Amino acid sequence: MDEKLMRHGAFSWFELMTTDVPAAKKFYSDLLGWTTRDMP
Image (cartoon, rainbow, N blue to C red):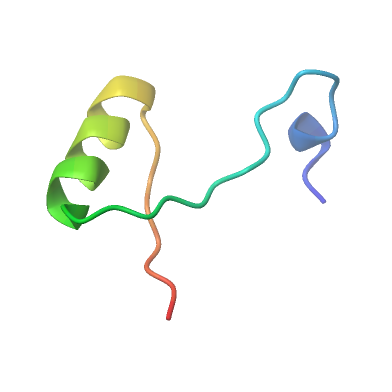
């Protein structure tokens, strides 16, 4: 596991369910600099 995810207080849940996937991807990418990966 990535060391930065093992620190106290680290955000560690990366799953999102939404009805507007493109908008959610843009929002979180713009806000937090996250990248996304689609899962089946």
